[in-house]
Each structure stands twice: as structure tokens, then as C-alpha cells.
Image 1 (cartoon, rainbow, N blue to C red):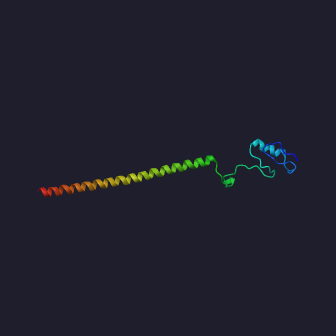
Image 2: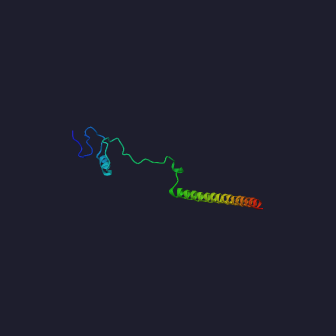
Length: 115
């Protein structure tokens, strides 16, 4: 019973007739640990997207959508700011009227006391 000369694999060659040197050489080039089980495949990176290809969007499409969404948000923010500034302006006018009315009443009261 002889063993492989590869230091990462300590599998006797007699016990695994299906193992091939091609498999160990390809895994050795990649630099990953070899399982010693020739029927096991090398793992690859998983696909993150579960969508079918026809539904996936390219980077350019997503970038375009993002720009459109940002432009829409900017427009909405401008409109909200305009509405808020209009409310603020009306509130300030009402406060000025109220203060002027109070001042007028105070002066009338003061004039009635004096005379």
C-alpha cells in the first residue's frame, strides 16, 4: 500500500481507484484544501440572485432607475418645502395681525384710562 506524495492528501491510492492525479493537480493549483474524496466537487461561489435571467436588470438599468428615483425625491422635497414655507408665511401674517390687534386694544385701553 503506497501513499500519495502530495502533502495535503494522505489517502492511500489502493483504497481509491477512482481518484485521479488530474483532480489533485487541479485542486492543488487553486490552492484549496483537498477533501481526499474524489467524488466530491470543488465548491464555487453561490449565485446570489434567485431571479431568472430574463428578470435580472443590468447595472446601467439599475443606475438609471436610481437616478430617476433621486430626481423624483428631489422634486417631492422641493414641493414639500414650498408648501411648508407657504404655511409658515401665512402663520407669520396671522401672528402679526394678532399682535397689531392686541397693540391697538392696549392703546385704546390706555387712552380710555388717561382721558
